[in-house]
Amino acid sequence: MGTVDDYLSELDPADAAVIAHFYDVVREAVPEVEQGKSYGMPALLYRGKALVAVMRTKKHFGVYPFSGLVPDRVADALEGFDHDKGTIRFPPERPLPDDAIRAVVAARIAEIEDPSLRRRG
Image (cartoon, rainbow, N blue to C red; front, top):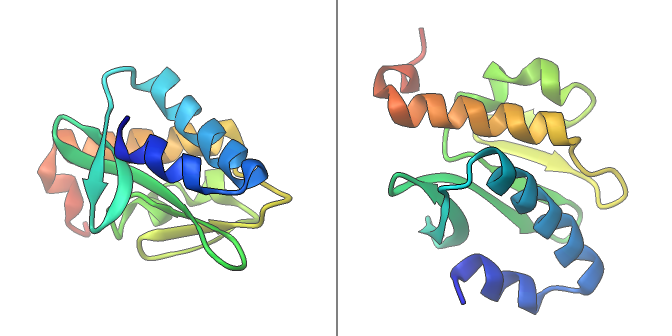
């Protein structure tokens, strides 16, 4: 079992279902992702690089695309959700829409494939 699976097994079933759905959407979009860890968080990796992590906090879920630029780049897809440099937050009762998840993942993959995108333009 990988680190994402381990993390999910430790969560309340309702919280685990929200995070599992997030990761399912990512895996549908990018089947070659692997489980791993980055910055101490269970994460999905793409080509050995941290792609995205989702963690349950006391008040919300946090999405970490391992980039300070991705949330701003996909701000239109995140309308109505709290986000800032490197973090996207959503309440348990209102998970991120699948299209927003795909937008975050696509932006992060673009950065992994073209490191010049990791700099502010």
